[in-house]
Image 1: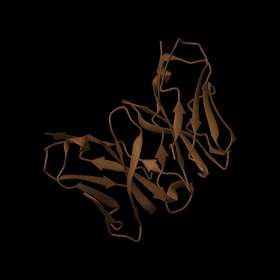
Image 2: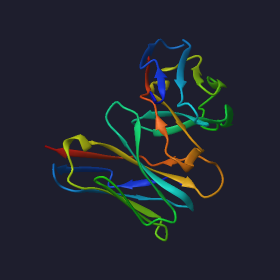
Image 3: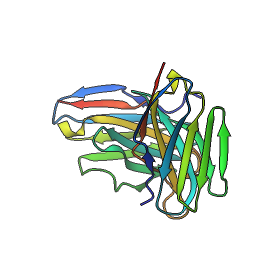
Image 4: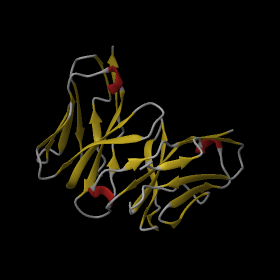
Length: 112
Length: 114
């Protein structure tokens, strides 16, 4: 299965701290993406990292990808209360169907 | 761009009734996906289309579910007859070139079947 699995499943931190989430997957990928979902809303695309990239930044987000370990991490620096959400990783296969496989999500709570 | 537009936002219906969910994808996107999200099962892909053609409907729970995409700007997901276990949030998403770029999700339809 290509489905990503996030770890930890739930994270509670103080505002201003950094939050790190990990995602593991099982097969060869073309790219890996991270999404955020605020309560009661749809998923929002945050960042995409391709299989030939090792690190990518977007604002306070930093994503790493280790294809040898089939894992990725998402770091949110200087967290804010507004970062409270569920975060999903999703993998795009190197071959086969052209659709993402989503993980189960990781709940992050940032305490003001 | 207004993004992916879903309607209705909320739907409450009685068991046995027909339910139709609607989606307008982003103009120019060639892929459209229907997902269902519940606490127990998480995010499940029901069906997806490429250039209005259904590609994979293996996630559709049973024959009570059907989806159509008559043109590039409109898709429907129909449940007939509805059952309480269909209660969930249904999301539509669209993308350009499938999984090669990010998906844009709609705000979802929260369906409650009583």
